[in-house]
Image (cartoon, rainbow, N blue to C red; front, side, top):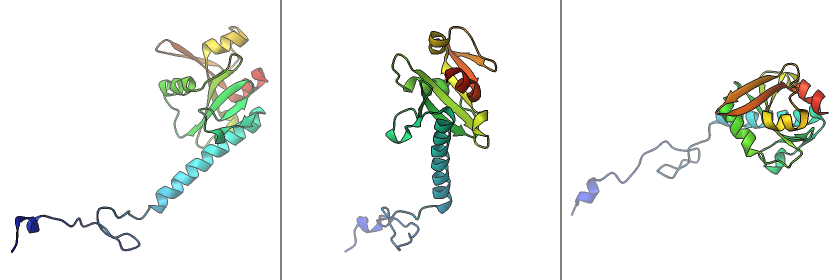
Length: 164
């Protein structure tokens, strides 16, 4: 005796995996190109944090899984090596994720994917900079304003010279 249930599609055909399993719960074979790209991105990020810590004479604390990667020059710095600069709103969000004590600065370091470390830029909140350095803005600095938040952009070499 056949029922209406026999006409329903109980089997879910899918591509066979490397072990020959098929069905809904079979895991597809991982894409080696994507795996390699993710591995290289992680290596590049780790190397950027390490090089920045050495350049500024600080220490790399990335392994502690805090929102900052480097502690140097009395600052907590999040480092980013990206193909294109993030928006100012994204930089401000990164700055506000970093918790600091009274005598420390929050900073985000950005560098392009194919640039040298010394050509990177440091982004700081202007009010924190003014508390320690008054209104003196170093050469090469740029002031950005968005939604009432003032962000100071400095070349990393100038930041190292002023904060050392």
